[in-house]
Image 1 (cartoon, rainbow, N blue to C red):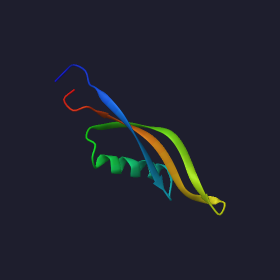
Image 2 (cartoon, one colour):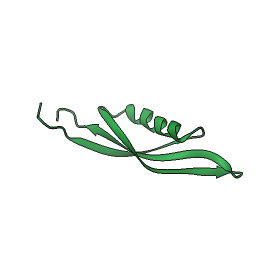
Image 3 (tube, rainbow, N blue to C red):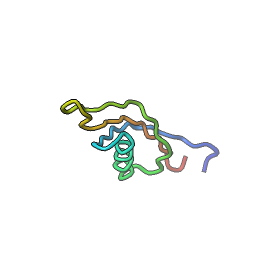
Length: 71
């Protein structure tokens, strides 16, 4: 194993009718199905859909950092 690690970031968009936090959790859970070594996330954008003057759903764009295996 090397003395340093190499990371990559990918962008995901999660949504939820409940909350911003739930939208983040949904994106992380879906990403976890196919990406190993997830290490951190950063919120890039937050937005929502309005229905009849109220929040219909929240939408959050996040970048997820993960370590490249064997780096």
